Image (cartoon, rainbow, N blue to C red; front, side):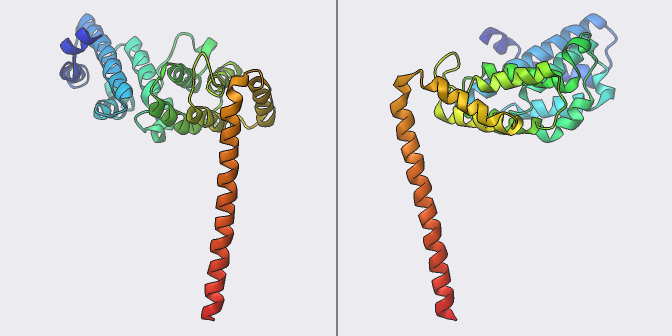
Length: 256
């Protein structure tokens, strides 16, 4: 990976983008080679951003999204397979680069996939890629960012299999231990996203989760302690609210 990045870094990606979208290339073999290099190189540098939780290559992502994917006259210059690969690539990173506001337009420019009958439409393909991406994330701040932004998926018309896949993915982050070993913050964020996207069956899911947690007694002390801390915080903020409200009324009456 690192050898490839030294040889095919950002400058190579930029030159590939220029050759693909700004200059007319008639050689199909060269076009295919440039397309593959562009998608692979962009994948590598985007993962560098994820691993370091930075957005040094956001300009490259926005170029591929705004100036290529959302512009058919440029997108059609590359082979259909490269268009599909680019769509899958952008699907995985569009949440990370804070571009969910362009999701509706992005889905409308989805290229034709040969297995659409089996996997569904553009929304299904997008959600499948997001679910797979979530399973690969190991950096907690990035994972929390995905879980907070994934609420944009609410209201999408998905196939039952796609919906179940996303639900299963989110549910895997709600329990401590393997295989994901999520932190407490990740578990709470996953529960929030799951309950927001799939409100039906919310109470039953939490009840089942509580039952399974009882099977792991080594988590009881930390769970009890966090429950006590949450209760104390709730009581404190409630009393503080009453105090501030009463103090405000007292000052108002005193001035009157």
